[in-house]
Length: 408
Ligand code: AMP
Ligand code: MG
Image (tube, rainbow, N blue to C red):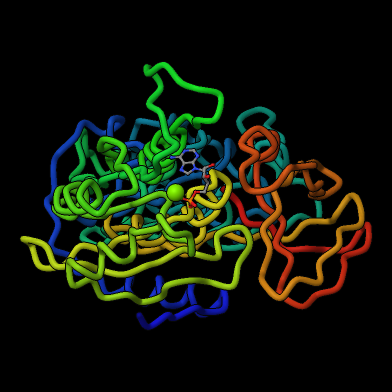
């Protein structure tokens, strides 16, 4: 069996390069606009008219000719947002009172802020010494977007900002990519389902649930298959079923133990492996590849069974691939930098990911490593909200040093 154990950065680029190669033949479905929140836009949104559709005043004030403000101007009318000026073209020496959001009357080329002006007896005077640029306090027609131009490309996740754009283009519904189906197989003789009686030495299958939740948070549909015992027969049956999903996730059974049979079974299915391990901790035995299926190929990840390993590997490697399968154009995991609240020892030959708590405030972002009992410690993992990255070979980090943090 040929092993391919990669450094962390190599493993990540391998995943990203596969993710970028995922083709855009995806089903699109139409959903009501707000129901589209969190979904991936399947068809670009195009401006249905110029935005703004008219020269828009950005202030309450007076529409004028900019060069005119050196003298007193005659106020000849008033214009509210939602109205358009029906009077004559603004002439030299004239001003029209105007509200934020109203269209600039023909003849005017700027707006004086009401705070900078005074009106007395129908005459407007601008504060002494204050000049006005042509275009000041006006957003010209089409400056935000031209009619027919793309305001949201396909592949963007719809959040509130994107939904506002779609609404501004008059869309009450949007076309989004269908969610990919992700088969989840937990393997292990020690595992017990949540509703089953158990002995002290057995372990509840928490990974299938964590994986289903992470899949759903990334826009996929997690399908939990039955637990596969560590036998070739059960693994073969579950892999045969799971490979017909859009992505196959296995937990457990990828280490060097006598009953770690996942890789062997995947090979029987003529799997192609991109890596069979990564120099990370937790998560070193992680495997990534693809397996022939009815639709051609299905990507799979074999995730080490320890719950923190499973989750770290998901955030690092599975999430980018899943985002690609969702049709997202942006897929790489997010790393930010933060100050350590206390010293941390590194020095390992692998890149380590330590459960940690990130807290952000006006004074900056600080991160504290959570005390834990190793990669089986689901409770410690849940006390954190991120992972501090300790790069391979770095001896130690001092209190106050800036470190990389993997967001989850
Ligand atoms: P493995 O990767 O199969 O060697 O599993 C390593 C350890 O992870 C096991 O001994 C269990 O303690 C734990 N484990 C494996 N699968 C699961 C699971 N589905 N849910 C929770 N813990 C698991
Ligand atoms: Mg196992």
